[in-house]
Image 1: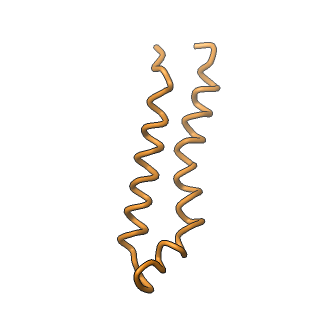
Image 2: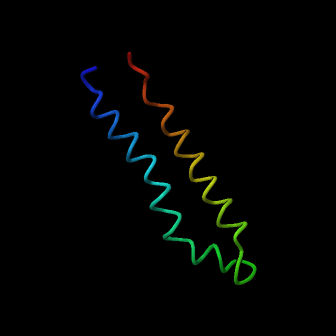
Length: 63
């Protein structure tokens, strides 16, 4: 319980990383293969969210 605040901070940082990265490279992803390639944008967004979830697996669950 002593590291709960640190663990919570890591969770928030990891979850927001996907929300920060995807809009930064959205113009590049939308321009791949045509002017409106939303498949690439959503695929990268899903991949970023999945990688964030994998990063959270390292934080131990505390009671």
